[in-house]
Length: 193
Image 1 (tube, one colour):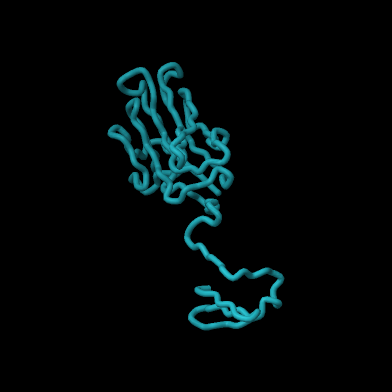
Image 2 (cartoon, rainbow, N blue to C red):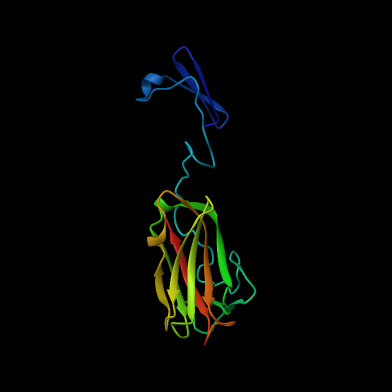
């Protein structure tokens, strides 16, 4: 619909370049003199819910990072993925891998938000964080302690109601200069609406 014209209780819609007349009495709706149509965005200030998977390359199966961003000591390996062929390994503390979402996701739309993380090494030295950033500049985070194999991390419980997600980040934190006995492996990141 590209246009709407009204005159003497008759309405004409411009559909694909052709005027289609009809009477408002034919429809159980009330038409006003001014009708606004918004496209490719929000209606009434509300962000619409996207559908499907929102994380690109969540299993790192391209063998490369895009659309993920990362710091210096983060690599794609093929040694011990949770599934598939590849996974991301964060080798030093304070290093990270982060994905800024191409479509902002309102928290109310999220049905699944999870990742599989393996923090090898002693529990008391290797820690990781999952950080969720919102469009208003605030964040939510959860700390992960050293675990001996991939473990599902349910991210949904840390989400703040009423906010809109803009990114997810995985950050290695520890007391040494390199993660003891391995690293922080990340695989199968998923955000589904």
